Image (cartoon, rainbow, N blue to C red; front, side):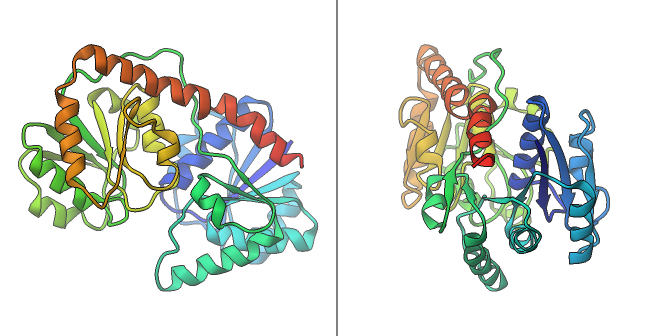
Length: 331
């Protein structure tokens, strides 16, 4: 089966991480993947990320003619779109050309201004093709033929308990919806613990001005695999989420997650078993939980680490996702 993965992208975030894992999974299971970018913004991070496997990356020039030309040249069995722009364009053009198209929806936030308009168009045109939601919250907002397939990652059977210290991490975009301000306030209350921020974003300069001394900013990290060994607890005080890859990757490494009860997080985290889900409306509860976590005996930490890894390997691994995706593709 030949799958064209279609998106508009010039950076590397949650959607791009999903596309990388999707392409690797398809190739590992002997399908053929082709990534098509709506516009050429120069060198793309995915080119380096996928350099070890034979996945072509085609860059269009941002017009419909180039997309139609790419469809005729590659003749895919399915076009799988990601993001609102690729979704709207992909569904309209593929419907006209009688090519099967499926769209994955990654974000539950409707946005503001022009983004709200694009989100509305995305929802309206969703009736033209089957949809895949990465969380149950997003699934409820979709119309027409829809499926829920949560984000997935490759999971190794080899892992070790690393959370022996008191290092709390924030991994992601420093923005309002990710709860970056809340993380700083939590760190201020938990002054005895170490807090580390991996990521950049529009609030970075502001947060650096108000952050207490127990917060360290590491900037953008292209490969978190080299960092997870330095993390003992992942804190995600988000206002809005799907099923974030940072949480999946952390738990796959045996790192418990303390997160808001939004998006797919309540289904990912078993409260008091492999992490904690709390209401972001009461951010001080996050600080209280972190201080309680720091007092846990090593045996309790080890049990929580094992539970985190087990949840990902059973429910969020590519081994469990692949047959579900193939079933959707073949419908």
